[in-house]
Length: 507
Image 1 (cartoon, rainbow, N blue to C red):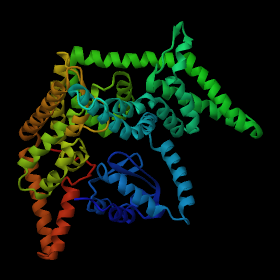
Image 2 (image 1 turned 90 degrees about the vertical axis):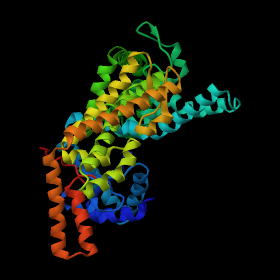
Image 3 (image 1 turned 180 degrees about the horizontal axis):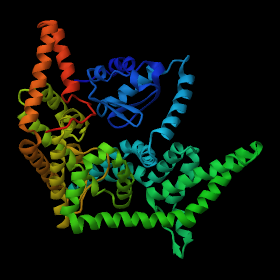
Image 4 (image 1 turned 90 degrees about the horizontal axis):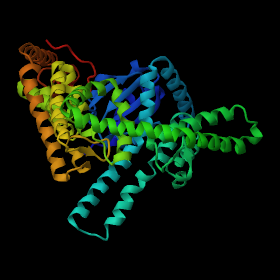
């Protein structure tokens, strides 16, 4: 059923304290991210009961409403329209910028703040990576089958144009995120992919167009931002419009050519070599570790550090061999959720949550299952990690045999990753290995959770809690529909409903 985005936005706004309490609005792939002046004014229980809301997460001052892919884009646009009133827009923006800066300084650790800023550079590129990756896969199928030969060059141009200039987009986003002029960041980053750099020699070696890739572009734009800020405070205002852009491009450009491109090229090559060596040499063990630890990394927000690595591998090799291994964590989560569904057969609330969240989980969107099922119950989160480790080991084992499984874009996982798969042994074998990893993750996640994740004490506790809530609602309101509605709402927020960010200890 398609969610009415305007109704959902209108329902969320008063529950987060109204327009005056909202200081910033943004969104990622699945979450509406809000800055709130006073987070205590938000009604989390009521928010979870809003149709279309899959969960609520509070992280370092950011109030996040989980809505799911696609839906979040529409709801965010409608939410911003509700806030965009002439009498409050300027005041709201100024207050939002001030509070965001205060929270960055006071609440966020430097490391996590740095990761979030890195994510802000690369996350906006994901839609283009996905679109171009799918088109590249379609073009590869057409070439292998010998179909539509006249269309293949056009499809290749459409699919490859963005990747050829991805350094420019990284430069634009980097300058924007770190307080510089975006177009200057893009201009300096464009040097990395300019064909004429082949005539430049640095450290006794001729440079190559694209050397350093996205890491070189990121470093170039950071340098340009620093130079620009230095100039802004020292160049006379009358000459600022002429000297600041010129000095920024000149100094940062020369620094990029005679230092950053070479250094970033070494780092990029090392990342590619290390990733290939890791899976080719210790594939099963590496897959076990990566697949098993990815869910905790997501919970801590540390998975954002992998985004530049994925992007570097895609830019350098055409696909990232790490993403299919990490995607096995979602398979373990699905298997664990199905086991909980079977074991807690008398808890209709959790079973309803699992039924509604499982399709998204199969497509790689694991947040509803994480916050609605595994974390609140405790042990299923650990057994889900075991399933992810098993699936990762499966994919890693085949990498040791020389069968690479990669993804041409980041963002999707689960079954949604199939259109983006690429490898060195043909699409059929690549898809078979990836599917085998998913099935292994499902099976081990289910078995581990069924055997160890839901103990008899947990089952008894959940059943008793549901019975207590049900009897309490009936005694207060009789058998009317209002009582049943309240019981469902309490069960969602207290017994593992979508978005409950607080893990409960499991016996």
